[in-house]
Image (cartoon, rainbow over all chains, first blue to last red):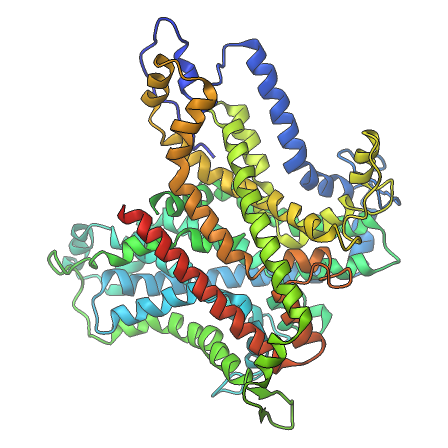
Length: 302
Length: 318
């Protein structure tokens, strides 16, 4: 998150020039400033990161009291996970991993192929196809939830019933207009000369896409991957309507049944929440820069 | 969080889409291939969109005019599903809640994000770390956040937030159980999750402010608050418009936060448009009425998006 950058400039005699680096005019040299900033940072950390860290601490704490939150486990134990696994938490975790893994892979493949066609080829009906993808960005996925439940149970023309399989979640999440348009926008900027050189070599279109264009698209792939992952992992309504039995649920949905289970305590719920949290943390730390680039490039240009 | 992300990129995409595709102006630089091969590349995307976006949408329009009866065949009922929705007082309440929640969360998250960005602006490693940590609520699944906030909001006097209030001598609040408070408790969680997202946008905006303006304002003897008001805030205005517009459109379809935190309760005090649709469609099996409510939500979203595009275009033309 290194968006704020300091520009080198000449020092002025009267005023400390570093106070022009930030909007609030922080002066790093001053001791009072440093103390104030440290206090502010501590409060912000407590408010925004504190609740997340209580999940981690609470998951490893054998704590019968549902009102206590802690940042350090007092009775460190893995018992919460043992109880949670009796409640089938690993099954839900596995469902989530499979759906996120295959769903994201499929979403990327679809985005790369469709993005390539839109960006590097010219064909009749191009504007219509682009319009179709743009239109679905206006169509909130929640709006189609009710009829989607019916469609998933009986796919038109084929009559396949996807409900109760992981594909009932994977296939809908793989259709992401956002990913397609990000890939298309990026591929459009690849210079023609590079592709031309490969064409003269006689490489096939598929080989050019995979061996030449794709390696140049790493920044766009990063953006698509992190937004895609967070989007799929955050699914809540879709896994409910796509399930036949509660054992089909993703881990996010299964947390509610852990909470409703009167025989297990808060620690077990937090153990489940911890498992639902860890993959997001890992992906976030790996692709943090892509995330920031994705958020800011859209908002600032508009 | 992803929905925000999805829409945050639209301006970029609009720009990219309106550019001529590569090869129209320059020399055609692509391998010789038959005209239909391009459709092979598009086929996976078009199939998925057809099956999981467009067919459900048209099925939804159809179902909204029907009484949906599994195994018996649907019965055509005209506009009666729509009148059922529009005459339902619980739906009126839900729409009012949706608007209050959306308005409060959008404004709150913008102010929160702005304050965070101003406080955490700077190039040091520590600040980078704090920014990274403060962003965690955005990447964490909404269901996980809902569960931890339910614990923070525990209604007993020794619940976490209540015991914090207790230390400053305030009475305990039944955050999610008191119908007068519950909607605002949900709103606070939404602001908490939305503010760090906006912070990133505002930080990028702050980095783009011309430093010589700060220097010039100091030479003119401007105080810090003048500098913030006349230099910093005007520079952030484009970012602020985008953030507010996206939040407004997104707020219409809020579901997961509300569903996990309160389930629409207590006594419907936090029921929103989507939780109403869910209850009708999946708990009471009135798919026809739920579809009609979904189509109305779609119309409202499209109208609001169109209005937002109009406003941002106008601003851009100035």
